[in-house]
Length: 263
View 1 (spheres, one colour):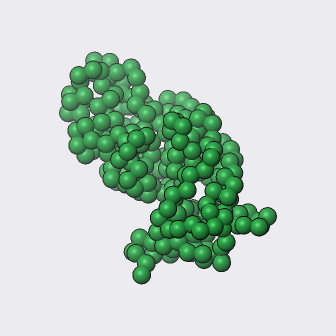
View 2: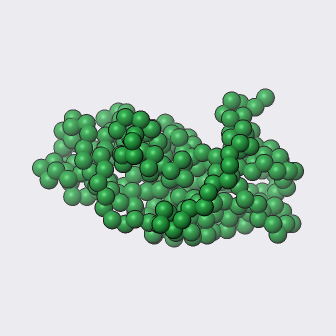
View 3: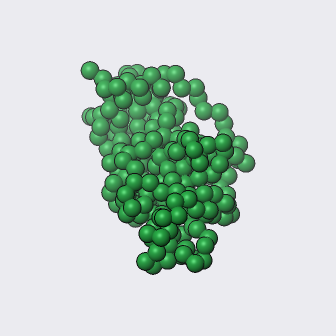
C-alpha cells in the first residue's frame, strides 16, 4: 500500500503543469551583495531543520549539509527550483559581526511572517547564525533575534562528492520520481531528462516540488541515463546509465561526475 507521501508525489506529478520557460534575465546569476533580513531557529547551536521542504531528509543532519542549512523566503525558494542553491550571508554591525560570511544551502522554505510579501529573508540554523559573529559573541548575536544582512550567490562545494539520485518511495516502472543531491556549482536545477535502456529519446521530467522530479510513463526500462540542466546558467551534465536496471525505491545511486564547483 502506498504511503501518504508517495501518493501525494504521484498526484502532484500527474497534475503538475510543465514549468514555463525561464528567461535569461530571470534566471541569471546575480553576484552582487543584496540586502535582506535574517533570523535563526531551533537550538542555539543546532544544525537547523529536520528535512525541510526541499525533501533532502536526513541529509541535512550530516556533513556536508550539517549546520549549513537555510530556510528562505519564496523569492529565493522559487517553488522549489531554488533548492540546493548556496548563498553567502553576513551581518553588518562591526561591533559584533565578523567580516566573514557564512555559507548556507537552501533546504527549506519559510512562507509567512518575515518571509512574506516579497521580502528576502533567511531563517538560519542557530549554528550558522552564530558564525556571523566575532569570536565569543554568538550568544549576543542570537539575542538580537533579527538582523539586517547582505547576501549573494556563491558556488556550492560538496568536497569531492558526486551528484546522486534518490529514487523516491512509491516509484514504479510506470511512475518514476527522483531527488537530486550534491550538485556542485550553481546548485539549482532548471530541467531534468531521462533516457531508457536501448533508446535515443530523452524524456522530459516534471518538477514536482523541492528537489523532486518525476515522470509518468511506462513501462520504463532501466538502466536510466539522466541529463541535468542548471536553472541559472543553463549548464548541462549527463550521467549515463546511473540508475541500474534493477533499481529500487528509496535507493540512492551516485554518478561519477559533478559540475565544476564555480559559478
